[in-house]
Image (cartoon, rainbow, N blue to C red; front, side, top):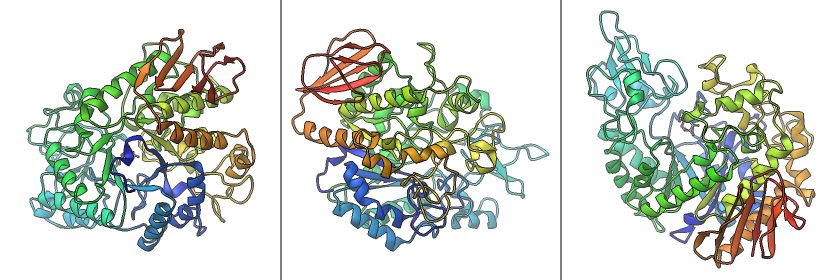
Length: 547
Ligand code: GLC
């Protein structure tokens, strides 16, 4: 990417490498598979891809348990193949964003193995968060639970425990340790030198921690503390120093490397500090992942996030699906919740209610047609907003959640650590269908590492490619048109509109969404794009772009 500000209004396509395309037939997607699909990405019209982790990993958390930050998992490829992929993407004008996982390593990381082999109090243990057990029976240092369930502390057999915010296979780094800081600077430079254009920063609000209280607060006390300078885990002030150092590294490159932080915070105003030009530069706004398809909620979310992006001098991000949540074509097929009662919770378990609705037989059944209609309407809505849009692989095919994976096929630790409570995130990670038949719908010459349902056939790339009215061809048209419209865009303004609709304009480009079930009158203007056929009126659950 040659323009320093390319990311501000980019369409970024998230690839979950293990589930994208498998060239070597080991049932796991690989980098060469992605390279073979660069023409597909180019035709889709995305500006950049974000690659979820492809580093060596035991897959205790789908690759977010990293053994070595500067290598490629042998099941996925080699560094040379990474370079080939980067070159192919760049040749197609597509940027490359890699995932940096700085909150924790895997328990197989050389430094963690060294820490286990080293005595209590040793410099090797200082790089992680080791604490003595409490009392005569060496109880865990606190009663905290990890994000995937179970204790957040794992005993190591000598009276000490280590802290893991996520799975026990993901020990948290100690960011007060200079070795850790230097190690990540080295990693950022390693990938930037290889030509990546940017970074997605995993769990970006959690790196800095304060475990100095003795005793540590109880889980109940912790839950009552707002994230911020007094919270031992989230959104502490010391993060500014860490990201200022990273910013200096990003700015060594021309154009400066870009970064977007995965930041889940209840107090939205706190998001701005991650998105400034002194820090990461952009922060994820996840509000639409939690919102129902309702005009008032969408409007509030847009207003708040444009505001925050303005305060930060950044651009907002819009996202409807990713590898952690129920695909939006399924979410929107469920009955709406009661107004004013948004889904609650945070992190990988917050949408468990929706997963239960999807897996709990057919009560209430998802309305597949309505789900996809609303999904396309919401996608057209966010694509028209100022800022950048993050798409998740497969949404361009209209894929919905694979909700009925058998327990024996599931891989996600949040399933295993929350029996009977959380089904986990595998349902949105099922390998993509490229053809309507074949051993794994064209994903690869062998099977797929998660079973694909029979209904995937109708959503295969080859099928949709050949169908003028497919979701895929609609995405292609929308992305192409968006690029053209952005060239002459004006300031964002809301336009008054009937109840249950939203209307905004950016100069001549207008976006109108009907969130209700019944049709409403089409506003004046030429229809440039519609998420479902428009015939004089705007049908329910439909977005139109007008010029
Ligand atoms: C982020 C990732 C998620 C992962 C977690 C721990 O939330 O998106 O997939 O499980 O961090 O790394």
